[in-house]
Image 1: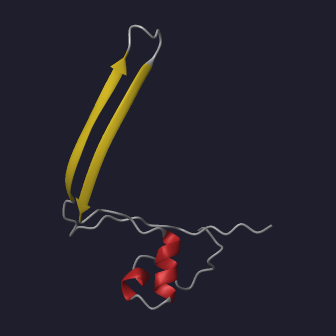
Image 2 (image 1 turned 90 degrees about the vertical axis):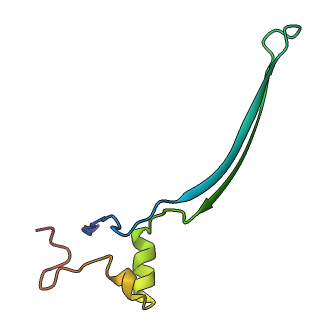
Length: 88
């Protein structure tokens, strides 16, 4: 079995802007003294996010680069002139 090691560099985006969210949450807890040990809770949440911050995993970057997306190709670098199986 041959193990292939791929170096991965993860960098932040210097042009990153904050994401914006509108949220509404509330909850109710009910404990009845007549029913020992009975507790019930109901929670509600509504979250709307604009400009959500996310990350592209390496497989998606490789797939997009192969499909011709130049910005995805810039996410990975190949070490020219070296055996890709050599970790040195």
